[in-house]
Every structure is written in C-alpha cells, then in structure tokens.
Image (cartoon, rainbow, N blue to C red; front, side, top):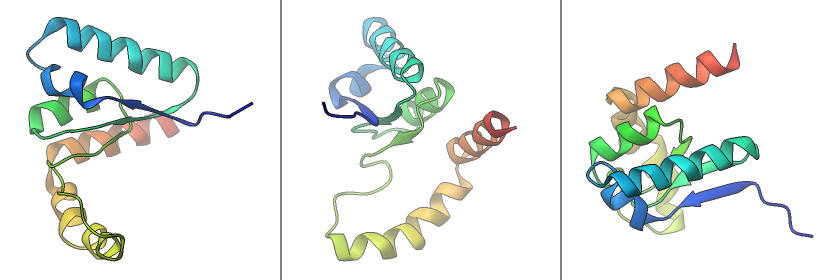
Length: 107
C-alpha cells in the first residue's frame, strides 16, 4: 500500500479560482479533503498574487508557479531560494499571512 503525504491542486483549478465559483468551490473541497486526511497541500501553477492570497486564506500550505519563479536547473534552485525569491517572499503580504497562520496553528 502506498502512503500519500501531499495532495496537489491542479493548475486547471488554480487558473480560474478567483473568477469561477465552480473552480473555487472545487478547490475548497480539495483543500478540505486534504486537511481532513492530514495531508500537505501544494497548489500548482500560481501566477498571480490574487491566486496566492486566495490559497493562503483557504489554508493551502504551499504553492508553486511563475509568481515565484520559472523552472530552474536543480543546481540553481538552492541559490534562488536563499536569495532573490526568499527575500521577495518575506516582503509580500501573502508570506506574512502564511507565517501568521502557521504561528497561530502551532500555538
């Protein structure tokens, strides 16, 4: 039996979650299921701040997409994460909200 630790929200839902009520409802259901199963959740294809904010408000733990970076070679990922992207993330409201919600959940 395979153990599942992470559930990904497909880019097809993320693309329209701020403009299509059905995609928003589907994404909310995916996140609720993930939470009830104690799985980490990753949203794929996050390209806009409004999408990242919506996902943060819905308690999606992680996101990946062009909002933060285009795909990079593995060797460049560490430098990217410890320099430019990390600094940008710490200055965004989404990052502040995520940090606040993680601290609140840890208490």
